[in-house]
Image (cartoon, rainbow, N blue to C red; front, side, top):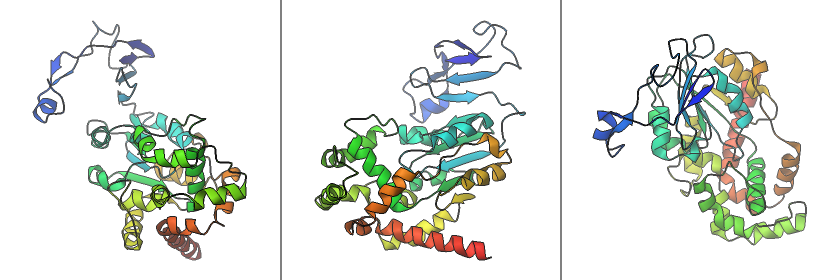
Length: 319
């Protein structure tokens, strides 16, 4: 699909052979290109505001660069929250030529191609992916952004999602998430999160393989190659090293200072950005989950990682 000055045209058929995708077996025939001209798009010219998207998925893979609006930066935000900060991503979208959020919804090859875009000088990509699998595709000049939060708070989000999944739609869950979390969805289905006794009994009675699905997701995202890979204390030094490579990092999301830091680093006005910090209802659930001893073992690596991150934050304040 082509959008020119706000008007949609297409779908336009591909009729141009490109050797690279055919040679590298990215496409069966290599006929993946098409030409945009005045015959197909009336009044098309250098000043036309242009977007090109995939007709099936709606993914916009090309926007014409606007030097007055788009930042000449490559930005990657590693999403670590299961319920993504889409409000932040969407508020950053107008500042970039290429934009893609929730990229975990796509296959690894598509994500790789997004990160390797070289013909667009302004790119923003965000998603809850395993960083180890894509680190090599991030050019050195990429501005890397991420954030963490209390591991019990993240567990509260994931437990709420799995326990309500049968009765409520969660579009941020990828098909892979749904497949992996299916046993947890079945076990925690219709769990009354307001009943402390039921909450405790349900978690205590969960088989080890189900609790393992919730094990230290932050550490896994930073150092694991598969969502089912175990992590232990030996992974922590690598996780801390990976975090040190992010240009913008927020350790707890307790307020909206994360958005201010992003705005300062990218050179944009803070008023343009939206960010939803820790929510009171989920924090209250997290505080009750903290009283269930077995969860300290489930979240062990993340709890230690979070402890060291908070210590580093305190030292930075003293300096």
